[in-house]
Length: 223
Ligand SMILES: C[S@@+](CC[C@H](N)C(=O)[O-])C[C@H]1O[C@@H](n2cnc3c(N)ncnc32)[C@H](O)[C@@H]1O
Image (cartoon, rainbow, N blue to C red; front, side, top):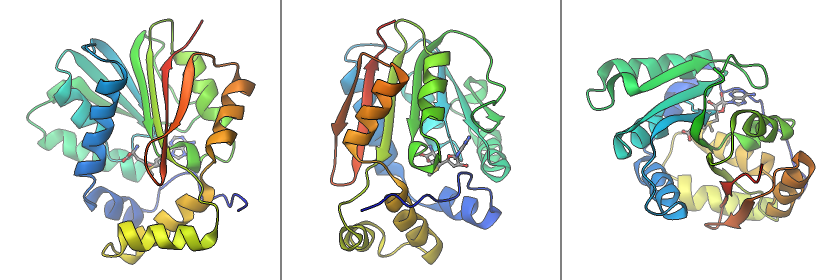
């Protein structure tokens, strides 16, 4: 089916609050596990950049798993960054190792420091121009930076998108079911992501399908 874009930023406070209240514990722990599996034996030391961090759940999980890293989450939604900072104020485990920057890509004021890893979950499908993500990664990654990007992929049909919403979000509030459906329709197919990487000149990254609705891009840039 054709891609149908959705608004980039999740800046409606009700939408951001519903997203922050959803239980992503299993999905987000799996992302941190998968990062660990993709880069076996590697402790993550230094700065980690999380692009499109939303309310920051993955930032906190990542910082808790890798105690020698600090995570910088970036999101263009003020509502999301406020939720992330509110959680930071309550979080006793990761303390000052997690910080958030409100900024829309491209152009967010991200410090030009060496990043040990650049991660991103569910940002790509929001972007009207997907090269914004790949250009940002190209700009902030250096040789040795580990890249791990996860997103939905676009189903073959509207019927399959509807089936996925019923299977994975039937008991969620209306606003989340609507967002999930719209996100599936806005997502890219794996071959489209491969073409995006080629256009961006990012070599060294592999695209893989990791579930019936997710793809992952991982690797270390050849540069
Ligand atoms: C579906 S949420 C994912 C949040 C988080 N990564 C997670 O996995 O829970 C996508 C986030 O990307 C943000 N976003 C979308 N377009 C953006 C852009 N151009 N610049 C910065 N953030 C953006 C949205 O505001 C939203 O918080």
